[in-house]
Structures are given as structure tokens and as C-alpha cells.
Amino acid sequence: MKLFNSDRCKICRKRKGNRFCIRLEGNICWNDCNILRVDLKCSQNCRYALKKNQRNGKGIFFEFKTNADSQTEFTDLLKKEIDKWITSPQDFWNNKTPAELAETEEGKQQITTFFNSFTIPEYVPMQYLKQRLNLADLIIHSLKKNFETIAAEYLDLIISYEWDKTFELVNIKNKFADQDLWSNYLNRITSDKILKKMKHYDLISSALAESKKTGIVFLEINGRYEISLILELIGTDWFVVGRIYGKPELYNGENEAVKQIALLLSSNKINEVFPLLKKYSAIFPDSADLHYYWGLYYTFANNQQKAEEFFLNAVEIDPDFTEAKYNYAYVLHSQKKYTKAKVLYREILNAEPEEIKSMNNLASIHIDQGDYSAAKKLLDQCLEINSENEIARKNLERLETLNP
Ligand SMILES: [Zn+2]
Image: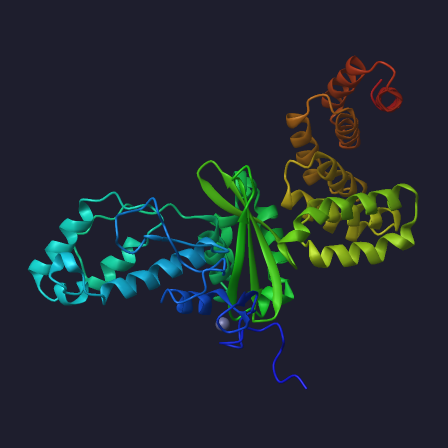
């Protein structure tokens, strides 16, 4: 009989135990690994044991090197090293501990002078040391937020139900300049059943792509649901661009899933598409491609309402997704929602001035609305791009009968 969920940490029994501890002969979490290994008693055979760093002779608290599965884990370990250093006698301070030294203003000054004379690597959490010893004059260079910090900020906002405050963390390339897209994002994210009931999360690991412009943070929500957050570096800031429900390895599976669905749709196997779309959307809720294929699926199924919904999702996730935008415009157009359709066709033409389908459709709306000169201009343009274009010719005929 198993008393405990077998994938839990042997020490805390709460977090995922995803590394084998040689000392305890069992799987533990990184948080507890940090508590253990900082005493330097781990077997040197363990890849997470602290090892003497030969190149670094500075002899403070970063004289060891080791492995960590995330920045967060490494920072936590450094804080534990700082804690240990603070209470250890230092021979260059007459065997006083930094904690004892910091009891007087003079002692604090001594520590401050000592640190200010070094160039401390950026990853060392000096802010923590500053707080622990109350060193007002210690110079700290402000740390650039890394992608793990942004992921944590994002989830913290969601835990406190401040969904709208995620704006700054998701407004990549100013994509929410359009209020409709922003509302759609809020609708989508607030209907995520797992995020809605999130009480806490544990960061498990993270990885940075070779380009250093994509980061994945792997977490567990409520000690139960695996999620990987995808972040992208745009300019100097990190943005949250998507969720994957599952392990980070799935990141590369999205393309395969999309290909599979595209193939089934193109061979008209509609019935087979539905269960697959359902399955993959549960894993990749922020895949613009999957939303686009849902849109096509509902177009085939003659459900314009649903098609509109999903094409809008695709455009909201990726405003540069022209094919999705065209289909969204077309669904609106077919339902005579002309104002919005016109804006979208215009946007497509601004991005792709020779996109003939949008040009024709826009002309057709102008005809319906009696704006014949605007229609004529667009249709002439169509025929300039392609004099054989049948639709433009037909539209022109229609225009001439209405406006001889
Ligand atoms: Zn643990």
C-alpha cells in the first residue's frame, strides 16, 4: 500500500520530487535539496552537490559551483549560502561573524566597504544580504527581471484575481491596442478552469532556448497540475506568450499537432478532426493555429457564431496571422457586420497591399453600402494586380449595373 503519492518529495511530501538524493536515497524537491546541500556534506557523485570552484579565489559565499534547474533555484541556494556565511566566523574579521560585526554601525561600515570594493557577479542576491544585515550604504546594481520573475509575477496576479493587471506582461508588440482583442484575451484567460482555482504554484525548472529569446518555465499548480509558461524576449523585456498544460518537452509537439489537423481538414475528415482539436487545445490553449483550425472546422460545420469566436481568438493571440484575420473578416462580412469587417480588410491591406481577396471583399462591401467610387478604385486596383481576376470582373459588372 502506498501511503503517499509516489511522485512527491521524500522530505516535504508536498512538492514534486524530481531529483534523486543520494543522501536520502529518495526523490526530493529542489527546495529541500538546497537546504541539504548547503552544508557541503553531499556526495561529490551527485550532480547537485556543491563543488569547489577552482577559478574563484574570492572566498566569500560564491566559491562553489553546482547545478540548478532554474534561476530561482540557484538564487535560493545563494541566499542559503549567504545565511550560512552571516553566521560563520571570518578570519579576516578576527573570527567575528558578519552578524556580530553588523551589530555596530562601525561594523556595518566595515562590511559595506568590503563588498563595495568587489565587483560582485550580477546573479548574487546582494539585496538579500543588504536586508539581512541592514547595510544601508551597500551599493546594489538593480537586477534586470529574468523570464522566471515575469512568469511568477504573472501567476501572482492571477492568484489575486487581478487579471487585468497582466496587461503589461502579455501586451507583446502592443497587440492590445485594439480593445476588442484585450477583452477577448481577458475572456479567454478567465475561463481557464485551472488558473481560476490556482491557490499556489511551485516552480520546478526552466529552460532558455539557444537564441536566448524564448524561455520556458515549468511549474506545478496547486501541487497537482503541470503547466509550462512560454515567454519571449522583445527588446529588453520578457512577455508571457502562452501556456502549455504539461511538461516543457511538449513545446515542440505543437507543430506536429497542427500539421496532423491541417492534413485531416484538407482531406475532409471532419469527424476525426473534432476529438483531436479538443485534445490538443487542452494542452495548447494559446496556439493561434489551433484556434484558426477550430474556426475552419466550424466554418465547414456551418456554425458561423463559433467560427467567428475562434477566428477572433486566433487573431487576438497572433495579430500578424493574416489568414486568420482574413477568415475572421469574412465571417463578419457574411453576417453583414460591415463596420468591423471593413476595418479588418483594411488592416490586412495595410500589411499586404496586394492581397486581392481582401481587396475584392472590401470593394463588395462598398458596393453594398452604395459607396461606388471607393469600390471602383479597389476593383481597378485588383485588375491591375491580376487582369484575369474573375471575382473582380464580376464585382465590376455588378457595380456597372448599379451605377451605370
Ligand atoms: Zn521537498
